Image (cartoon, rainbow, N blue to C red; front, side, top):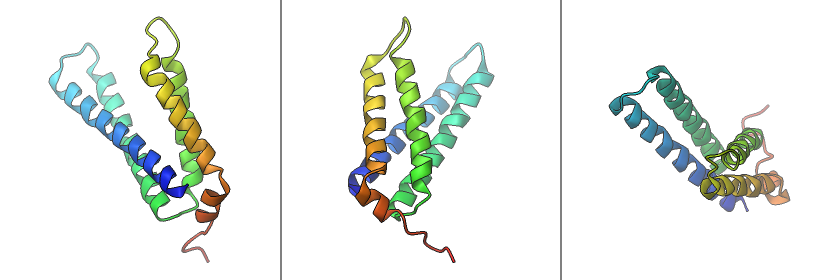
Length: 125
């Protein structure tokens, strides 16, 4: 189960990293009415990618702190997916997968084998 969790978190990391790079390219090459907004969104995407990258590394090492960080990310991801399902420009094609992956990862984070593998606090006195 830990390997499935690690695989799903890695896929999420790759997706947000690709989004961050795409936003960077768009911000640098496209003229926009609000370049400040594009820059801010790009910075947030890179920060999210760094956060998820740290979670992936922590998961591979079996560190305990990843559970809380991953739970926060999954709640945010589910909220984005839910937002994608609403409104006149709803995008269920990517809204449902975001929600589905978030639910699966949340379930894995609370599974007994994953909790057992990530409960040791390495380096703690």
